[in-house]
Figure (spheres, helix red, strand yellow):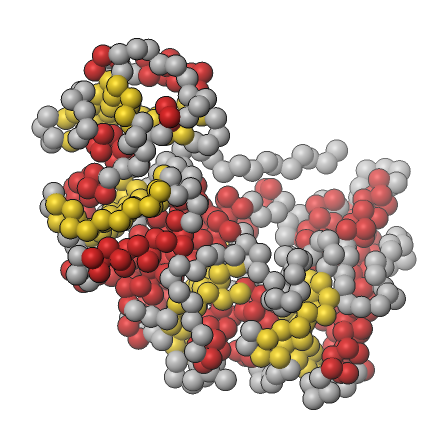
Length: 230
Length: 349
């Protein structure tokens, strides 16, 4: 059984999954406060499923992109749980988990995960279904893209077809979101990854005793070098 | 005093040191690890919060594992987890708090969110036999306050800085004079070769009633004096300015602490000790002034060893041990606090 959680989006979600079954799940929509509710939520999920930490086989967590603080809340908790339990910890990107979540809600072959960065641009990555695994595989790297460059960025992804494309994530739900060509299917209601998607993506890694998962910020820290004194 | 056999893991991530320590109630530090991020921040001339937060996440779990291994303990042998819950740079505090909550949850251990300032305030009791009440000067890069320490969670603040912290002023003056970062050691070293009569700087707040500090005007005075230099800044100019600045800070701190001693003696006639904590307590000139000041007033001056004056995790573990003894623990929905005055009656700064 895998404990999975996400604190990188506008929700805090935790669940325990056994194979392809969600044993227990809790989720709360919120912009702030992940640090307060995460551990009580995890304990609640374990209690819901009458599960103890010792029944788990691994920890799965989203490692970004998203709010920097949200990324660290989840990763610090996951790495702390890994220390305290000795269990392997796997990190999956929020974009891939969003795409895999959306794949269960559409017939489309391609899925663009588009997240609002809250800084007038978007975290973007395009995926396509992978028939060999039943999951998704990426059609390009994760990127930070300005609103007015979003259509061009997507059009530049090799193999992208608007008529086969669905989008997931809260990016296109923003009032300032750019117009994209007709033909795509926008699944903006899928704003956070499902815990099952996180578990499924993590499962492959957990077998290989992964090192602690690293954050995916996609942006350097904001810091200015001081002006040199003349 | 804490139960002598109790063992607490302490975690500190509120500024630019990532640290873990395992401390026993009898004052024995079983193991400790500290990683300074100084080199990460040096190019910026100060601590960059986002860089600090990222570094804490990258290193904390490994430091804890190493600390526990050196103490030769499993988590089940601990009596509690103590972590800095604020005040400080919130991104870093979050990393420590979430890690501590996770460990506490797995092993069903009491979770203690420690006020970083209380960690500093009590650190002297980890190494020295100092009884409550005592007078504390907390002087660091983030704080400059005078407090009466009456017990665990029982503080009366007598004064604080109205603007910059003392360490912050050292950093800024070091930056202006090209002495580098961090400013404390750089200014002290340069000042040793400085001419005390070359520059005359003001003594902000000196002679005024009360125990508050102000360093912003002093910093501005340094800038103006440097701007008036006819030629480019020389090494000797920097040394002379460092000396003038350090002398001014020492005068001001001695004056304000003198007022605090008068208040302390009147309010707590049984009090015997003047204690200093915080990174600026490393300054030898300041220490000498405080030692003299305490002796003149019949108080005993104590400074914890330098490594427990600056930010560290042993002091957090120790504050946790002292708290554990009172039976008050924190819930796992504790919210990290970027601002958290020690004296809850002293709102604001």
